[in-house]
Length: 345
Image (cartoon, rainbow, N blue to C red; front, side, top):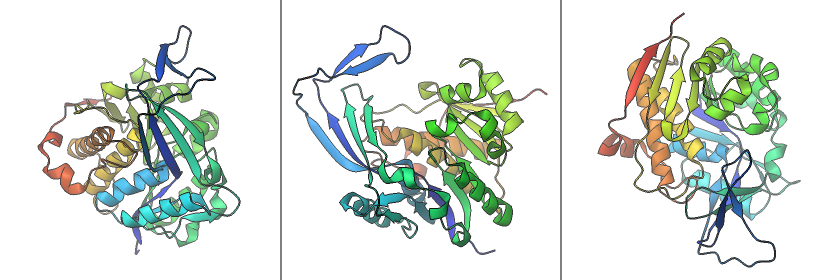
């Protein structure tokens, strides 16, 4: 079987405008929910100290990671027939990503995000999804895709894309990684369970995992027991500054995080981790079979963590994403605290 691509990403594409101001006021939340709020007084004029324009969206962010890591990559996204859409397509080409499957939607504008960021590095994102909401399975030429891996991001609850992806897996042995969005997870475990079963890699954060599975946020062992029952591949759970845990149903691996030189911008950090981890698994896998040895998992976790750490040190969703050479030659990425625990049956 001849494969045209090492990996194809499917997801969103946006034009990002990041705005920073020293006068953005962060207020502690006295009630439940988020710990802090960004407060903008009505009727006020707020001075913006710094502005940055770039591209984002998980479909394009992850594609750039794979391309920089040396993999033959294509991206499937939906953009409007406007300046922003053309800019996104041109940037993908410049990064070495095949943009042949980028769909231009005459009915909608390209997705747009306004990112408001105080000095803490955290942010509020005002998002217009635009053409992203029109990306459906009918727009994706699955019959023409030959790829070793598919990397799926937020599908806006469109499970038909997952069904088509499963057909590629059945026909060609394509590996599937999924980092679902909030709309996808809101469908609930009952609807998602048949699709989770066919995944090779599932990537969620700790809060998402607990909510989907209906268990306590703090019960990490119980979370993985439930994931191991519904995911045949590996389940990856990110825990913010506490690191990452991975389970394949037999072993739970855990790593910490690299120390950042500075936290400049967290936009796209999740995409950079997930795509870096899958790039590591791809590199360590042989003949299409995913390797889950300690060495392979550690390599993948190091690459994912390094890619995310490097990204947050720069402004923009793609700035700072590592090349293969940078990861393998820069000394700061050589070591990461690591443990492996066998699961008791």
